[in-house]
Length: 329
Image (cartoon, helix red, strand yellow):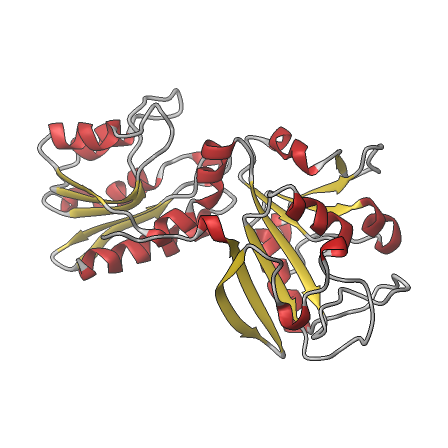
């Protein structure tokens, strides 16, 4: 139903507030609706507790009786030393109906949360809701693939280069696009560059947006050697699973690092910030895989979003095999 989709969309947007603060738990959003009025809402707390459902139900209080709960992820069915199972909490709250954005792949809950709600006489509808899945991309990737969700970001000239052949650092995109990158950094648990980029540019890779300075992610360098002070080493893209229980890794290049992750099939999201100016010649964005003229992706990626960021364009791509398919609400 359109109304269910509307409120699941809102819950997914609410969940974004918890990314990545909820780590190591997934960032979940929950809304309690009664007679068309939001009486409770919540997202996963810092460090994973309290869960979104607990926050929303507590806020709703007595108004939860007979209400509908919209939640992006199936309520957990396992008791933890840190708190009760959310399925039991919901069952005891008086909630009459639960609409769930996607199932929980954790075998301790998968299907059991829905079953427990139904056994308690609650109408529980499991939707296949693309925004809910997208809001949980890191958790879903970690559970399915045993590694963090990887976003590769590159800033390119209109003719597809990330910088001049000399390797000298050049600001490709404008101030607004660079601020947007800082926002994306704040949504990641770790950020990674190649050894050449670290030696040549000495990047800070922190978050420099007012109020978000404490969101700077852990810094990694792709190297088989030792990482300098304040950095951690990752010897190969294939070792990205060593970062668990991390959910979100942001890769900022350069070209050789971009090619290495692309060739390993480890890029779940490709963000290309494309400037309106040409360099004429330079370092191809994808290294040995070629340039990115006009922000074009390498083979095997499809554009899922495009928007103007100041004077630049941001193109977001996903691998063809990962295209979301919403089958119903």
